[in-house]
Length: 562
Image 1 (spheres, rainbow, N blue to C red):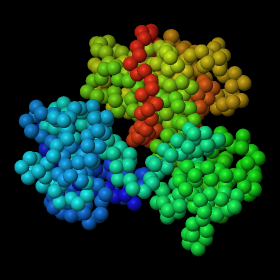
Image 2: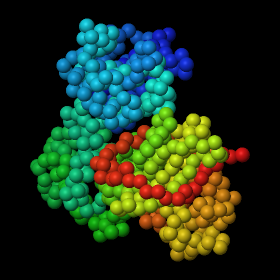
Image 3: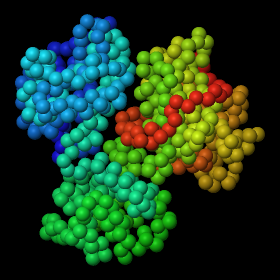
Image 4: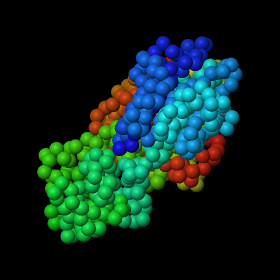
């Protein structure tokens, strides 16, 4: 079990540094960051100690003692700086030699994730003579420890960045450092996931669409890779010793003999060999049926695999849970290495970045696009009534590009979720709403769908396409009068919802649907579910030309409602 200690600075009556103009305190952000980071780490199996309560000011020595008593592998001490309202940027401090590597990794993560610059080079060594106040905060910690000054909160620009979601980027950065293995000495779920993907790429996995559900099974079997069988025998599936498998010998566990594997890759191959045995003949004789049906697969093998009546349901519940979502998205994305991402050309106080992350996470959760998509985001300034405008998508070297610009006159009036909702809508158009393939699905005279497509997506029998209004709205949305606040109607509304058919119709537009909606869901709820999904496909994005620009016509404009 890996342990992380978190020491949020200040607390109780001590506000720490203060921005008087925006009435923001260091104490509150230290706590928010610590709590959010703790939740994220616990979700993937780490033990976490926050060394003080929310409304309590605890002495420096007591917090350090608590971290030591907890036996933490690393410790984060969370702070925000202040000086003269002019200085800005982040800094990462360490006091001992065994903390330098951790500090360097945090600096690297901050440079990759934060949109504000470092103060100086960012990395700072605290001693009794240099930064003595910082030194006193962390000097007694036995484990690698860093103190973070994430920005100068008394600087208005830094404070604005913090208020607009910068603190979430801090949390994401610190999470990445832990999750990428800075304290890993045993195999972690993250390690197992990456090795599974590499094994698939070597050609040893024949059923890639079953990778995520089988991974959920192993996570359940091993308690997030913490079991003795997982760590000592690389047996992540609880596989009993069987002659048909005969891999690396056997392992005595709780009075029974289990299969021992030489490596995680050896286990992956052995697991599918295990399912080739006679008890699973229903699966083996119907592999083509199950290869694209992960739920049907686990319901078929579950009753044979375990005597527990709830075994299959427990795996499915984990597979569909928020806690498992990062792994599921990552594993299902390997089937086709396409992705939806963004490039910010211009911004206003970093408002577009977090919204863009949410919007791309939304669509990447539900579909694997036929070709990779880059959404270019920027700003313009106008005294007119246009809030945002979207440009006609175009293709270049196998990548599809869409463009959205937001009017700086109105941008500050909207929340991250409202901005993200607009981007999600426009990505829907880039995915096909309104384009050639879409136009083949329905009758333009009345907006009803053709029977051959209703047979493939049954909910289309209840849908109508908008046939009124002008270009950009007509034939490109669900009918406004009937569906009003649905995500893909033609007019932007508050409190929008998403119909299951908005996701399932993507299969008819040439995309792979990796997760279906089973019921109508509030759009904001769906955005909150994906807001903290960690991005793990940097190498795929690096292969794309994010800076490509091509002038196309304005396709759709969003206006201020009168």
